Image (cartoon, rainbow, N blue to C red; front, side, top):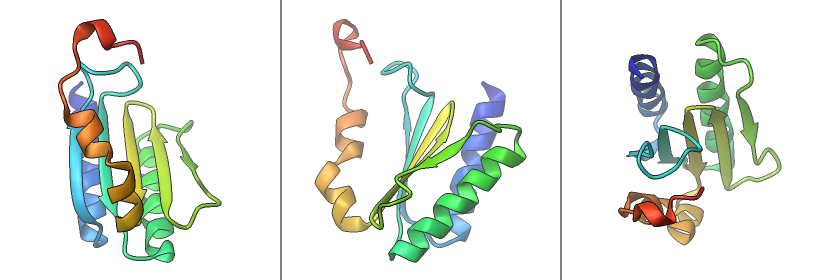
Length: 116
């Protein structure tokens, strides 16, 4: 868990240094088995979003997560970087507002509904 927390900090720092906007980290440990953390950030353009996703992927690979990958390669408005225990969504601000992932995943979910 310590490694995951350190990696999460490194990813957030990378996003921040590279001018990602509105970076949010959501703890998923008690909400889902898909990952321990979800990080959501916004990019200012399709090129910025692509660059951010490639830099995050590079961080995952540098930490030995060779199975990490970028989803949404065809999209100009959204990328998902799958780092196994950490999922990173990078959105164009309008798409981010449309999907409202922070709202969906930040709410407490009763244990009976924890099927994901």
